[in-house]
Length: 160
Image (cartoon, rainbow, N blue to C red; front, side):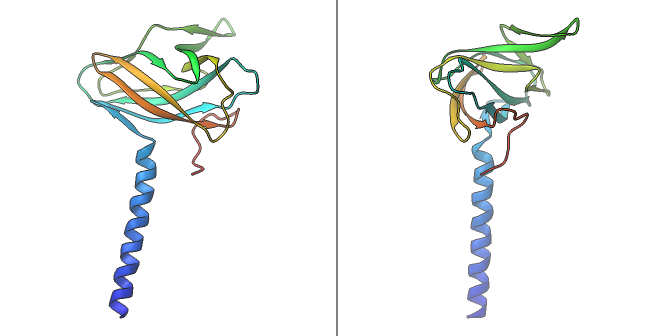
């Protein structure tokens, strides 16, 4: 009886580890040599027409990968933008594509490169998961889920 309780305890611990690992894996996406993770967006106030989304793309391949577009059903369009300092002023501009070097990684983050969701169809609310499709030249597309965090978030939170 004691041995059986131990086996049940081990089985429960194993199942808990499996569920925890599945939760982590659910927020990571792959497309050939690309690994995409830490996708989050900031919540928007009612009536806001745009919002930002952020993520990390890692390229384990031997050739550069190029993010050429993104789309989401929650916005009329999604553009790749870059924020930068120019003469002491913060500027934001649309960029046509973003290269991820072989063996490198690119972070889309507040204050840098990001996805701009334009003409939002509804506010982004904390706890929602926004579907986004990323399209890469010569690699195809991948659907990801972007967790909506509080308005001032600078990284994805772990509130699962």
